[in-house]
Length: 527
Image (cartoon, rainbow, N blue to C red; front, side):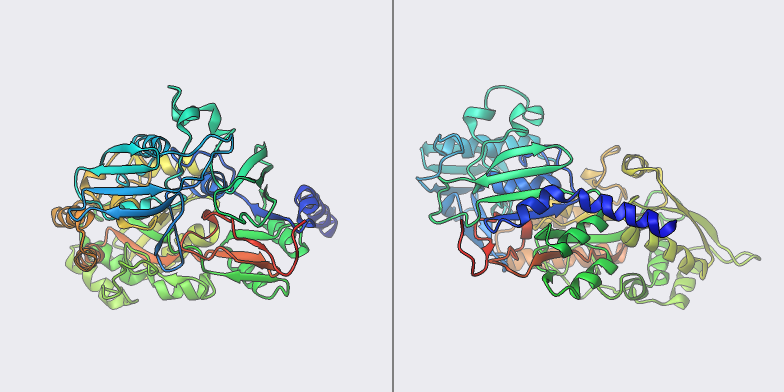
């Protein structure tokens, strides 16, 4: 009976891929499997992978990036940064049009930048922008209140889609605008069909401004709720690309598949970190020595080796190892039970007669067992060795977890947070004391406050010298790692998996959140 049930379930999952399979056989089409369900397609007001993957095909951005963090022309054929850093001038291509045939002009760029500044969740991203001047139809001058060197990276595809002002500038709230579900962009593909929770069909835009692109006629995002079904679909050829694979067994399985190419390239811009966060205002975690002791007892190496099969990269600080700002020379918190015991004693928490010191709870994001729940359970056993009794507290769903953490109703919690390329965009939010905002998840929910860190981050955000800026972020990382508001564990072991017959793969810093205008089938002519 058990085998019969499993067989029936598998059959149901495979049947659910039939829509993708019908398209996957067409060598002018690529089917991308995803478990992510987009709320809509407007990346100007919505962050995240679910929106960014299709949005970056529908909308073009001023710049795009290669795999070495170098900006490349896109809607802007060239750009100039003023010597004082207080303006950036974009020189736009003159042949770009939106999917409705209207030309893309500097007015659209100005409208989009100011809309993103107002509505995007990453409020630090365009904080320095004052206004955008438009001296002619193909020149946009971004005026800044102070230098902000991160602004060029903020012009990337997943962060700065250029919207048509004639569509979105009608006075309606951009967050609920009906065009969010029926978008008109100037990217290589246009929306053909969307069945919410099921699939997204994008078709080639014949008037795309880069000659000879896109190479494909169609991209289909097949939404698959069960990751196992997505793996089966990829192996069968019903799906051609599977992004953000993170299950260790799934990675090992796909590495052995003869028709699949799997890579860890394409996530450098995201910088996905998995960590244990502390409520620094709650005793005994208000003492840095206690937090440091937990880090020494936690045994990062064992977590990565035993729980993640060695497929994850260690995370040692607030900036991901692939970032040009990464500082490796920080306290590593190498597993040391004796040191942890000593720090707890010094902090005034000696062992009682029963061998315990105090009790804590640890929360985790539900539904991500390998990176969250399993690590929490492992830490529970590790901390017991130094006298800390830990209760692993489950949440029924993501909103429940987010409410607990954002309202500071926690002791410790597992969390997963992205760098989003530049520290100003995705790192500062976790450590600035000004970003301690109750009720807002992925802000400074640790309630960490260090005036020196605030000062360094403020200086780094405006420093135009790359060398000086890197030095400031190096100092920042050393201080934060020593203060230990977070025990950094690993970079999420994301992989992108491709049918081996595909070529010109998106392995830039933004991976599948980059325009797929060059992606094609190898040695096969388009229909």
